[in-house]
Structures are given as structure tokens and as C-alpha cells.
Length: 173
Length: 100
Image (tube, rainbow over all chains, first blue to last red; front, side, top):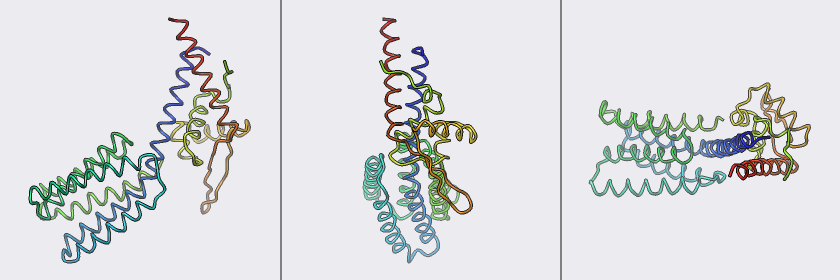
């Protein structure tokens, strides 16, 4: 065996190991993304059509999604993912307070922050997260600029639907 | 220097072994196929070769009318892969030393 063949063999090993980690991250993240997609879908649908009960839907949904997330088996990227979300949510909360955001602006900020967070995960943990980032960003922008009267519906169907479908997609090899 | 392993060195089988070595859980057929880049038929043959060598164990789990194939690395498979990777590093280092 010559050095070039050895190098190709080692490159194959490295590629396979990297891909295994990526697929494992998807496998572990899939059901969590689906859970948060369900929260988005139900929360923003309630916000659009029955705003008087929306706070309760959000409260129960957040609690359920958090419990689901924290009770999943741990994976390599858990710490990075939690840190990314914690920083993103803290940033969004502070921004909403500073700009005295109303419910619509807060919803849009949440959509943008979600997109950025998935983009960061896309860079570090796997390209499929970046695809989710693009879809949630596009749906947020469509809701904000093209159909502002249906912003919450756009976020529910676009963002929530993306996460629901994305969660199932992530679980496929 | 350790000796190279002809069974493992084939590109698809090397990827299969590396993938199994890197995941603490058994991997299913579809995941291994995605990582190795082998076709269904080829992958079956490669897994059979590795199983006959005692490097992997294959179990089938019934899921409805179909069955799901799970593959995991045996202790001797893990050792064989580590030895082969060490051999590849030796070949590479030896080649680099000769050039310099």
C-alpha cells in the first residue's frame, strides 16, 4: 500500500465519522424540533384566531416542549444547542423590551431569532438545520411584508409547519 | 508496524466500520447506507463479509410486515479497525519521512 492509498483510507474514516455524528445529531434533534414546531403551530394559530386563549396555549405549549426536550436522551450537541437557544432567547427578550415591541413585532423578532439560531446550528451541527433557517426566515418575511394581516397565520403555517416537517426530515438518514 | 487489513480496507467497508466505531448505539441499515454510499445490494454483501470475519453483528427487528436491520461492531471489529487505522498512519508517516 502506498501513502496516497493510506491517505485516502484515513480520509474515508474521517468522512464516515463526521457523517455519523451529523446523522446522530439529526436523529436526536428530530423529535425535539417537531415538538417546538407543534408549539409554534398551535401558539400562532391561537394568536391569529382566538387571541384571548393564546397566552394559555403558549404557556402550556412552552412547558410541554421544554419537558419533552429535557427528557430526550442526551447527544453530543446538547450543550451547544441549549447555549445557542438560551443566548438567542435572552437577546430577543432584551431587544423586545428595548424597542418596546408589541405582540406583532415580538412575534417577528421571535421568527428572526429562530432563523438565526437554526443558521448557527446549521454551520456547526449539520446543513439540514440551515435549510430550516431559510424556510422559517422566508415564512416570517412573507408574513411581515406580504400578508401583514395574517402574520400569525404565516408564522404558524410557515414556521410551525417547517419545524414539524423538518423534525420528521431530520429523523431520516 | 502493524499489518494492513484487506477485509477492512475496501472503501465502503472502511466507512461502515468507522461509522459503527463512532456511534455507541447500533446503526440501522438506512443510516449505514447513507454514510457508506453503498447501494442496497452492495451494502448487504459488505455487511455479510464483515459479519463472516467476526467484525460486526447483525440483528433483524420485525417492524410490521417488514424487518429493520441493526448492525453493531464487535470487540474484535473495533480492535481490527484501530489496528488498521494505525497501519494507515504508519504508511503515511513512513512515506512522508522518506520524502523529507
